[in-house]
Every structure is written in C-alpha cells, then in structure tokens.
Length: 128
Image 1 (cartoon, one colour):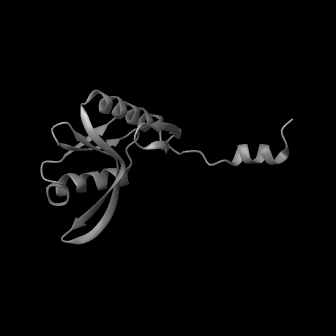
Image 2: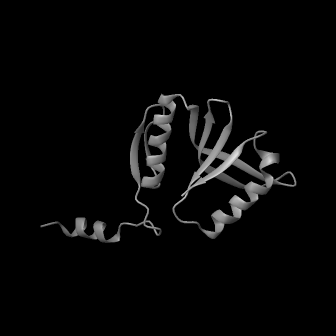
C-alpha cells in the first residue's frame, strides 16, 4: 500500500489545464528535451527525419522573438521551432493544441509586425 505522502503527492500534483502531456524526446542534434506536449515532441521527431532526408538544413527549439511596437519592447514570444529549409528559407513554426486568448493576441501582433522584426522573407506557420 502506498504511503500517505505518495498518495498526497499523486493527488495534488499540478496537472496541465489544457490536458497536454509533457513528453521527453531525444533529438539527433538537440539531445534529450522535454516538450510541453506530445504534439511538439512528434513535430521535433518529424524535423529530425526531414533533416536526415535533406529537406531542411537546421532547426532550433524555443526561439525567442522580441515583439517591438513603435521601437518599444512589448512582449517576448517563444516560438516552438525555427526551421531553415534546404533553400535557406526561414520558417517559424508554432505547434498548437489549444489556442488561448493571450496566444492569439501575440500571434496577431507577430503577423502584423513580421516584416519589421523577422528576417526578410521569413514565414510563419501554425501546426495543429
């Protein structure tokens, strides 16, 4: 029988309010990482396969984007993946399961300001 402490920890452990399950994946270039959801980990695995196939050159995890409005810092946006394809096209990818109001506000700002704050020709993509 489990001890009282084990029972209490199990009952009071904070659960994700959107029911996302943290998942650990070992990437060929980034090592072992814990992702916020299974969907993010699966997308990272897909990027590893695309890298091996030569479809992409490189990818980064949790890329920080400084959103500036009128030259002033407004918010930081940590996009899930920054991908560089074989043609040197930069694609920022957000893997989304549940859209929150705050996410939607930041995403809309990013869409409006992308030409000012991202590399020329960069693309934004949401994977659901």
